[in-house]
Image (cartoon, rainbow, N blue to C red; front, side, top):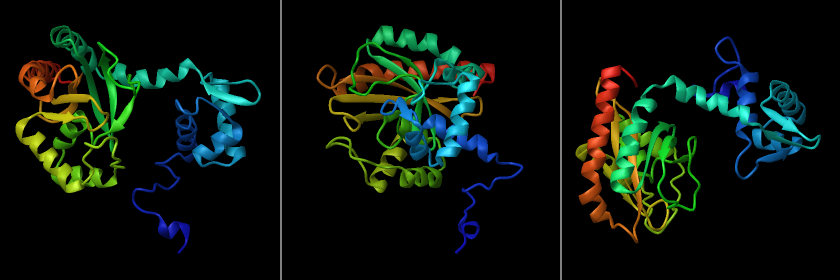
Length: 268
């Protein structure tokens, strides 16, 4: 079978509606990470699936534009790359509305609060108000985690049609991060349905031992889930039962208040 014949609807063709060189440029940017902050040309090419010549052209273009620097051997991203992410945040007024209420919630419950949106099979953090360092994973705006084993992820999946939520769970990695992690799709769908029915979700030590999080949806004027809000705490300080009893009502109040602001402003 030819390459053209094997393409699917999700495998876009170069053409008027798909600029392949731009897509390759994004792959080069995404090749940099905490594990690979500085790379050689060969490493960038391998991680982005490009030839050395193709990767070199893109890196030199990014360097000319100020998004990449090089010492002649290694390449690395510059702070200017943050402009791309902050363009999204500044274009979404909902986060300006949410942050003060998140700060008030953190002051009351003395635990960290985050907001995230769904991007494929992952959640992406768009706001975070930390209190304590409760995870070995370093989290900040732009951090990604699997939707399947996070409270915000399950709330966001609960806001989707049943078939779409199941499709994303099937497409995701579903790795067992701890002995508590649920990886079976049917069991995960049961938890997504539960989150949809009760309007919130608690995940107990599935992403990391000792980490408990509880999340609620943020909705727009049409009642659609556009993001999720959560509180995270440590099991050795606050049990799941205590978190549900003492913090869930305050989380739901904050989520309702933010959702009302979004509806009033027409955001999301």
